[in-house]
Amino acid sequence: MLTDGSSFIPQGTLAPIVYKEKRTFTSYEGTKYILPSDELERERLEKQHRIITQAFDNKLVLPPVILKNGDKVLDSATGGCSWLLDCMKNAPDSVEIYGIDIETRLFPATDCLPDNVHLSLNSVTNLPSRWSDTFTLINQRLLILALQNHEWVMALKELHRVLAPKGWLQLCEVDLHSFKGGPVVDKCNALLTALCDSKSLLVEIASQLPEMLLNAGFADVHVDSRSTPLGKWAGKYGEDGRDNVLSIWKGMKTAVMTAGGLGFVHSEEEYDKLLEDLNGELDGTPGAQIAWVTIYAQKSE
Image 1 (cartoon, rainbow, N blue to C red):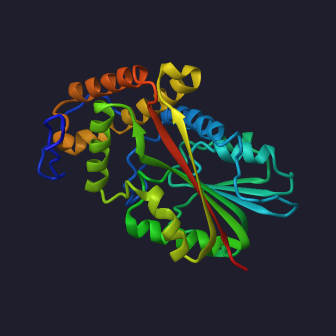
Image 2 (image 1 turned 120 degrees about the vertical axis):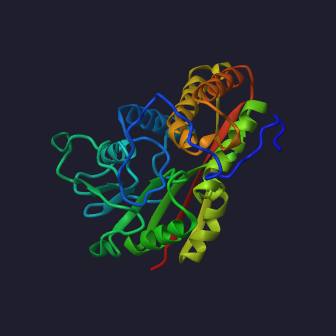
C-alpha cells in the first residue's frame, strides 16, 4: 500500500484503460521504449538537450577529449540529433560524426546535413561489425526507458568494442531518487518505478552504471551529478525543467494506460489530473528538482 492509499498491481492483472489521446511510437522490433517518436517528442528532446547542457556548465563533452583531424564521433540514441549537431559546430570539419537510433522519424532531413554527418537506423545492442575500434568519443543519453538489464550488458559491450583504444564513452542518465517535490512527486516516482518494473527496465541505472562499466572492461570511470530546478519559483530555467518533466509524463500516458494504470490511476481523466497536480506541486514547492548524472569512462589501450 502506498502513502496515498493506492497499491501497485502488476501488469497483466489489469485490463488496459481506454484513452483518447494518441501518439506515434517506434515500430522497431523488440524494443521496450516507452516514449513517443513524433514532432512533439522532437521538440521536447531539443529543449531537454538545452536543459542538460546548461546543467553541465554548457559543456557538451566532460571527458578530456580534444577532437583532431580524422577522428570519428558516435552519438548513440541520437533522437533528433541535438547533441550531435552542437558537437559538429565545435569539431574540425574533418571529424566524421555518426548518429544512430532505433527510429529515423526524428532525424533531420539529410539535405540539411553536412557531408561529415552520417545517420543510420541501428540499435546500440548490435552495432555494425565494421565499427570495431573506430570512435574517439561516444555519447549516449537517457536510455533508462529503453533497455532491460541484459540489453544494458550487451550495449556496454558493444560500445566498448567500437571505441578506439584510449577513446572515451560519455553516458547521461536521470537519477529518479533525486526527483523531489512533495506527495504528488512521490506518487509519480512510485508509478514510474512500477511501470519500469513491469517492463524489466532498470529504474536505478544511473547508480548502477559505474560498476557495469567496469565489468564491461572500461577504466577511469567518473561520475558528475547536476540538479536542475523544477517549477516557476526558479524562473525560466525552472519552468523549462517543469515543462520537460510534464512532457515526459504526457509521453508515458500510452504505456500507463496499456498497463491498466498499475493500481495508481483508473482512467485517462485521472491520469491527466495527476499531471495537473504535479504541475501545481512543482510550481509551489521551492527546492523541487531532478538530477542528471553523467558517467564517463575510457577504453584502455
